[in-house]
Length: 335
Image (cartoon, rainbow, N blue to C red; front, side):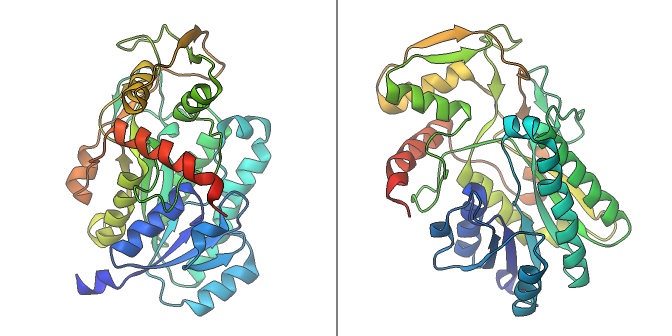
């Protein structure tokens, strides 16, 4: 275990919401961290005091300098990606270029440098979300946007490359991250995030009712269902994946997929109720029609994460709401 404690990890997208939180968790676990981020959405403040390289994951000059100065990188946590679903629909070529094309460039350079351990930031968006039921890693795949398709494509690339011995890889399929670093060192960079909790917070600030879009899904209360995982729990899953990498992605089974969620679904109405509990203030809601592309949703079956990573989520939805509110209050002071 002493060798593992000294591992050096490259985190692409390490100045973003999830990547920066993963970096903090790795550092607290005794791992050495190097960050690569082009700061297109990440914040420079999230790289302060860390070994930050500013550049694109496909920038040959930046990659050469980073890998020359850090020839001892043991593993790469690949978080860098464009992630806005609606934007991917209007700019599919941009998303395929950023998330797939540039990842191939990165992987080729890592292969040349002899770096073979990859932890990939994937998404539960690759699953079919028509039923609102739990889904395990063998669940049907049906990516419903160019963004989701890019995640599925990179998974396939890693699986194929692993099959011929070029890499070993663990794809972590994130469900729905919420919250912030509990010590408020990092969080969402955007003051008006587009996910359900962000919309709830915006409605509360504006004094407007919150719109529940879709009330006839096959869920316990008719509203859409998601698995909301606290971003700090998500970050700790990456630490577990790095620490146990050689036990999980073995030469005989060099590619693994692992769900990262709480194992419980929360409906939109229940998320509103959590917000009311945390704030102690009522939030009126209005019912609205389903939006194009909406799905009932799904929650993670997380047996594999418990078995192979020794990890499970510990924080509640209320914890995530509380930390998200606290971070939103701090964000305007972050430079």
